[in-house]
Length: 124
Image (cartoon, rainbow, N blue to C red):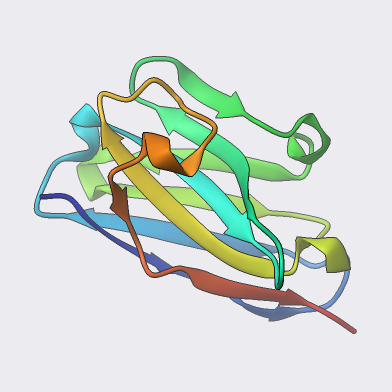
């Protein structure tokens, strides 16, 4: 079964950048869609985007499309989420979810495999 591990979170000042990684093991990402979600304190999971192996990149929040960028290297079994020009409202735990094939779902139940999350704190 696919295993996912996120990394790259941390404390960053407003306007700063971070690059989050979602590294997969036990299966090849060639066959999986990987989505990024985030959960801010006291809030529900929020879908960010999906790197679909069928449909390409799907941005669920148009407001983030200019600041957040997704990339993947199946040879390295890794998907990255580049966060630019970060705002305090981006503070959250960021999770990656994986689904074999995948429809590019914008909801957590569309993904069977999850990492443990990585914390992003945007604060001055």
